[in-house]
Image 1 (cartoon, rainbow over the protein chains, first blue to last red):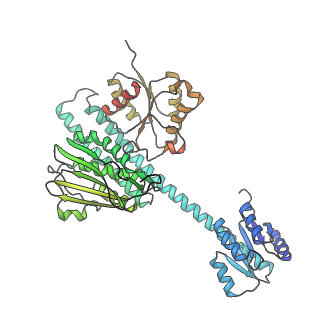
Image 2 (cartoon, helix red, strand yellow; image 1 turned 180 degrees about the vertical axis):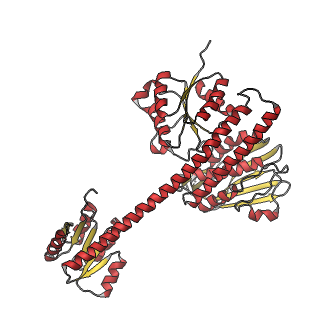
Image 3 (spheres, rainbow over the protein chains, first blue to last red; image 1 turned 90 degrees about the horizontal axis):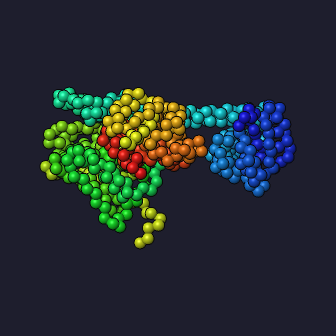
Length: 373
Length: 134
């Protein structure tokens, strides 16, 4: 809208009112339009998008109240001032409830009209500004998280990349001791990168944009692909990973595929890392009346019963390996729980110390439209 | 004697370029470096590489995607349209899902593959081999 003049629409069945208001407002340099009934008024609102509307409450046909109700649907930021001939409290209150900014009882002076209109437009200006600021703040927050992420990760990624090349022996042969030290440095770096990722996830959760728009997600192909992706990691930890999804199971849920993948990646990667040598990880798809169930089972040392209640808390690092070597950042499971909670689902763990643990994720089923029974 | 395959490496981080160049040359690939999309555009047309490694740069997240889109769609790059493009991403992508920037949904052409930074040398070489064989 490049016009700097505010546009005011006057809706009144009486010609004298329309004309006199128009004159008063034109003198104050407002752009003015008029309509002689509610129906035309609404059409002009849709077509012209005025900044303010002056509405006569008592009109034949569509009443001022009806116009108010419809106006709110079209654009709640358009200010409405109602003119009432019977200045009773009731009609004024009802008008305000229906979204009018203020009311003007007849007869009114030009000055009274101008003052009310000026206030209404100031109010509108502030509301629009507040909305714009809110949107800007959100974008800034998101950009900051992204920026911080990039600035923190970028140098670490470069360092780690050099380590990978060195460890692969591609930059000349390494003494055994040198190789060992570089490997240890590299391991610490990887954990630092993971920690940063986890913190950024948390920052995103707090910034309220954790779970994107929910849409139907078929877990079957998602998990099958994910398990395949995890095979190299499983091999690295000398663990066997398997995927079980009986035919005919309904696996469609309402969710955000990105964050759900994050949860399952976390669970499966934990199951692989916190396992026994020659251990097993099985990922199973199951179905309950209301839920799709995903079980991630490992043959690790298990989790003591006393630790189970705390396992999804932030910063809780429970030793899950016999050799006590690996420890996570303590954030992964708390993030996973936040994500599943945001989906309206459930995540639980059952464990037998000595034999292993099973993490179960339950997500509400969504009926696919075209599944024939 | 077969000429070694040429790989165009587009990344604004000189350390990353150096490390990856070592990986590629150890597998006898010839490496053409470029420090950004502009240089990348020029070099792909001039050198006609067998494959492109393209960093999805954060400052210009859109540039990586739009370069890929141009190569696969615009008349300007017709001569090199079939060159396989692998996105190298510092923005973590899980299990091959592009969750940070769903380029496909925005109507932008998808690359032939994705790989996360930092790359494991063996992984990178395997992917490249796979796409060169096609």
